[in-house]
Image (cartoon, rainbow, N blue to C red):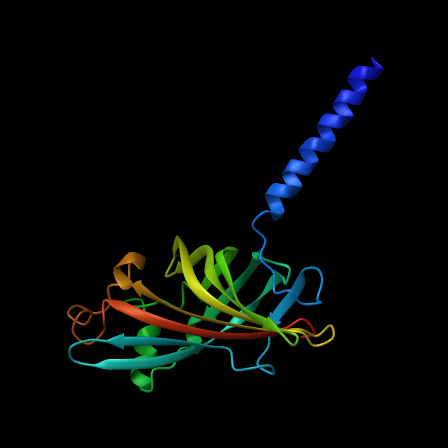
Length: 216
């Protein structure tokens, strides 16, 4: 009986060790003094959180912008474990033309009345590569993986991200930049007949800059 109990304890310890090793085997860190997961809230006091959307069509180019809000959790010693949720309020979109701003909110386009936000729920960051880490500042690149939701359609997607982490004595700063493209048809956005493909591009380029603080 004692032997069996000892074997079970030993097996449990080995299993725990294997799980721990697997969890941390691919952890990439900034090699900074900051320890533990940090809750980061996007804060415009740190920097201008903004999404830019660019449409280049045969008859017209559109360069617009929108607000970005949300929060995420990042462990500077395990960047892969980053999770969070980022949102772009549809009614914050600006295209430079007031009438076009109203059109983009309508049912033919983003249908703001039914779908208030465009969101990306971050599940993890993969393929992390440390670019630099010195003087309390670390920069890394990778792919943010998660669920992107637009116009009532949710898709599993991954976006390239550049993450900058700056130690500030407990009020650490994080800056994230990304650029990706989306196809309107993938999210059932048809627009007015004849507009997509002529005045609005079928594929939209999106650039996002986010700034947050652990002390926000």
